[in-house]
Image 1 (cartoon, rainbow, N blue to C red):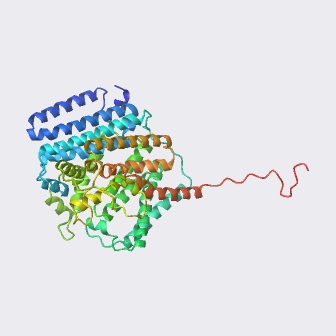
Image 2 (tube, rainbow, N blue to C red):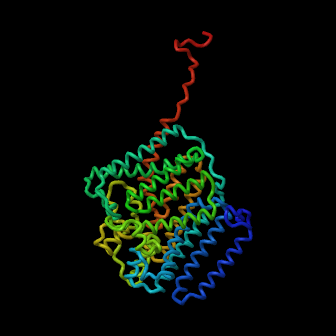
Image 3 (cartoon, rainbow, N blue to C red):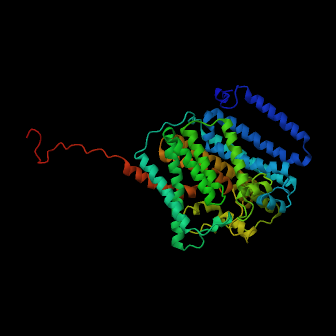
Length: 491
């Protein structure tokens, strides 16, 4: 076993023999649970174990290549997220029972009256997706190691001015957006807060939101690049942005999660690599946050408050972790029964259409297609339609495998590109954004990140790039060899 797998106790596993021991103990525990479980529970436990086994094999294979830099690998993080969106629903089916689970997703899934073997088949589709993405990533990732000791980056031209510019842009955009927003009382209102605006005002709001989001990632990148100098400011900025986004959206978690993941990615590459213990604690904290926020965001403004809501509700797995499973199961069930609604072919290229600004991005969006056919009375689409669910509409399991392989290949290319340009500030911003939002690929589509990259991050990079060029000191012009009067030396 290579030495990079033998981490010290501060880094997690300890002696190099720990991996085989850990695997053996895990296997014994799983066999014991499988023996004690009933026949229906075993149907769920088998694909769950398969998903974890694929992830373990992928982790060891990638760790042998990149060492402790594994936690900054976008492909590793995507596969890990996919496993979480597989294991959490499985745990709900075994421990809670979908008929009694709290949350919109679990309640809607219960209405479909799923049989346990049907749920198990959908979990096996998740396993296929995980395996194909992992294999494609390993096949194309290459053997270039990551940056386990952290990047050492020089000060940017006009760095303090860039920080002030980003902060001013964020505060100005947040203030103007608040002025144009309609009153927001609950979580659903957040998605309709600008519907009263005219065409011009709405586009101005979109521009402000674009600049604000891009400024988030530019500002965090500048601060984390020289973390030793900006430690308190960097941490305070991340906390402030997360608190603002949770309050502004009345509990929408994805923007806050993106900021947290972006900060973690920057820390991994610019400060020091995360330990296994730190990653496990972080994942547990995020899972708990998802569950708590899900309860709090549905509070009645005139009710008993946060403490009362948490006391009255039984905190279970957040519906967020069942979102991918629910639509995938629903559409595959209709595919098997022959009840799928008709799908228009432009849905296949919706990711490319979404890059074009200021056009209708709802007509061919699979999420809106799903809402039109299954939830026509919903104010906004209530569920996401990701690549697993989309594959049910088109080519089934073969389509699913192809989509997963494409995602794995694309993230392998992104990782190799970043390692070539990792000392450039703009490359770090782009990679940080892709890492932080890769969960959206699982929830929406294969090329979902293309539109935010071009339409959201692009304008911010251009703006700050021009500002950096402006702040760069110009070298004084070299003296002319010819005197002003035209006489030549010695003349």
